[in-house]
Image 1 (spheres, rainbow, N blue to C red):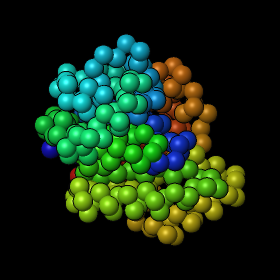
Image 2 (cartoon, rainbow, N blue to C red):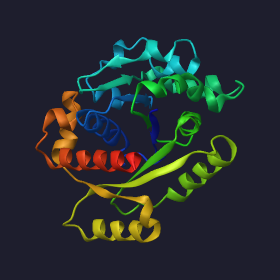
Image 3 (tube, rainbow, N blue to C red):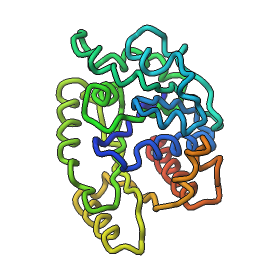
Image 4 (cartoon, rainbow, N blue to C red):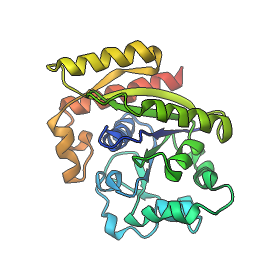
Length: 255
């Protein structure tokens, strides 16, 4: 039975999509079957895996609307063992359209429950907000990865996200767990980066992944070629970091 992991933080630019794409690709090369669900209207996870988002006819919008089955929305990617339910800019309308529907927070959960047996991991790339799209992802997920960038405002808004997770646990999904907090954009030369790492590890200890994602030029370049870091430059520090994260998650879930 597969595990559904949401990758969420309402702050933009913290590495959610970079993590979604490259963790999916890393799990794939480690022989895990992976489905990535792009639940962000910006559709960067889709384009980051070589999908032409303008040509998407069935994707996460239709999935949440229940106008297409999950199976009909899945397409292959250029990453081994990784498939995707892509997004399109029309996803931006979904929060308005779902707002007066019954059980609106459960639309994604209902749509993908039957997929769990077909994959080792289902990753959901969340939008940078705590709106209905992210609530759907957290309600559908077994656990959540929280990327935290090693910068000055790193912990700003984290309390709000943790309160949202507690609220989802209480009302919609009692089984939701925190898979881990992932420190991203780390630059060992900067004292501030090191301070943020110390602060997060001190406050959240066991909840923080051992793997830290270092700032890496190749990670920034790869999406412009529609490739994961594994396809783009497997010898890079970014690839090494994400393969390490994938191994840590596999080990944790096989234990």
